Amino acid sequence: MTSQPPKAPPLYPKTHLLAASGIAALLSLALLVFPSSEVEAKRTTLNLELETPAEQLTQDQDAADLVQATNEANPSPFAQIEQQDSAPVETAKVEAPAPAAPTHREVIVSKGDTLSTLFQKVGLPATSVHEVLASDKQAKQFSQLKHGQKLEFEMSPDGLQLNKLHSQVSDLETITLNKNAKGYTFRRVTTQPTMRSAYAHGVISSSLSVSGQRAGLPHSTTMDMAKVFGYDIDFAQDIRPGDQFELIYEQKVINGKTVGTGNILSARFTNRGKTFTAVRYTNKQGISNYYTADGNSMRKAFIRTPVDFARISSRFSSGRKHPILNKIRAHKGVDYAAPRGTPIKATGDGKVLLAGRRGGYGNTVIIQHGNTYRTLYGHMQGFAKGVKTGGSVKQGQVIGYIGTTGLSTGPHLHYEFQVNGVHVDPLGQKLPMADPIAKAERTRFLQQSQPLMARMNQEKATLLASSKR
Image (tube, rainbow, N blue to C red; front, side, top):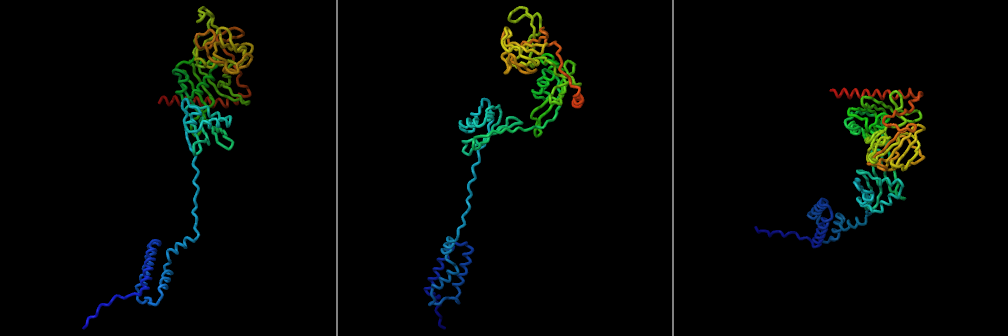
């Protein structure tokens, strides 16, 4: 049996080979453009078509038909790209960048700071200070700086222009400057606090001021209490350790925080075993004064001392040796020693007979109080604004300041008190009373005063009970 020679592999027409080569090239290019999964699926389909003998193309079939059919089944990636390029392109929306936020700076006023130095600290040009102060008359309040005060600056993004200046000047008040087309506008906002009453009690150990502080009272309220009882008590010489005080007073509150105090509503002061009471009452005409619990006026025609908490350096005497003249000479007044510049108050309403120089008294004020009384204030450093010969003054009004003018060895006030032209001891003189509560107001007064006194009694009893536990 004759062996058969091995079959030669089938020969494909040249045109088929050319077509296959073209398809392979197109597939390679498609791999660069189409997703891999899609290309893989199309490549498998084409391979199956080429390897099926039943569907082999005849030699006289135009190779171009195969290329055309293949292109229709798998379009040219170049054609697809051209088609995409010719399709309408949706333009992406490009949002404009947000405007730069203004620069915020805060500075705390230190010792020696001015508005100009604070503007320099935040980088604002010196011309900005003039522009701000000239923009509004009230804008000058920003130059009245306090140590520890905070100023908030809102500036343009480049930091060269002030848009807003804000400061809280107190717990109740803020001031603001806002830039506008014409310059700056000033705005003040005042917060109205709620008022509540509070109780305080203290025992004098060394001084009224220290005892008030220990009782939780601000200095201003302690001074107000001294003024209320100033007709009956000389706080410069009468105060003794063991003296006691208690009072009900107004507190100003914002969001639960105490931000200030108001009027004293009622008070009681025990001095050397004698107790004085005071109740604030506003009559139907809107005039407020202090009265005793039974309706007598606390106010007298004269306050006891013209200088608060001054030391008595020399008393009224008919035979005192003058420190400069060095001879016995009557001292017809009382000397109050205090630091230079301490305010001096008129002890009563009256007309100013003299506000000028008077021999050894130096700078002197003499006041006539009606037809009976006259007071003199000597050795003043200077006179208060508005005090002049021929003018009028009110009780408690500041008329001048402690000095050493005239025959004086140190800063003090020489105070004289005359009754019908006769010098009397101001410390021993019984002072005339002011009018009591009017009969028409008495019922209304008692309706206000009795609950206040009852509350003080209750508060003190509770305080004493708790101290014994």
